[in-house]
Length: 268
Image (tube, rainbow, N blue to C red):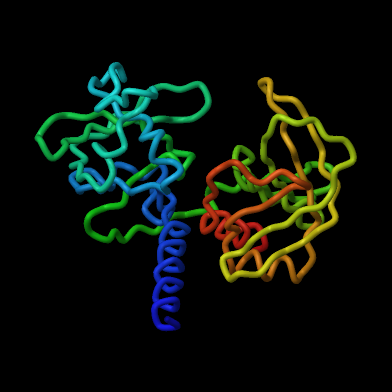
């Protein structure tokens, strides 16, 4: 009986571990503006967590003009999960398209049935790139080029900031700071407390006040944390896997490994 129970617990642990490891994206294969370097390579669509499978995949189309969803789901405005997950796509071509905020691209893919598929690629957001390459890639990404650096012409003080559009943003402005953002539907006043989960299993806990704003009909919860040396040592070695602001858990996909690299650039 004990052996049977141990086996069951082992299997449950294995399933949970695998589910935690499945994100639907892998930032190590996200190349940003260097997407052209993957041309001619086979991309493999990553599986998603069970809770996300129902919603399928976004940004796959049947036409270059981004019309008609590829393998459209019967329930959602997205591609059916089983028609994308673990499937292989040859990256045939890359075309840049105009965008008011930052460059975006249309990737021409060829699926396993030799049909053309068009994927809208966002150069800024690794969580929206659901692929790895069939063969490992060797590409050096210059994370420091993504850091916004400004010098005050009166004081000569230099400020540095990682991409502000990310839910996790590091800032150097005299001291070092971490800004976290998540969203919800509940207005809260006088909330405080931040919990950050790291990839080594440790937590960073702060009593920081949580600011609340309304944006596009939803509430934005924001924490601005001054980092000490111990915080910086941990955050530059271990990826942020998740965080919670007061009672509000993070609702966005995080690119912890990339944030870690940004911090290394900022503290140089």
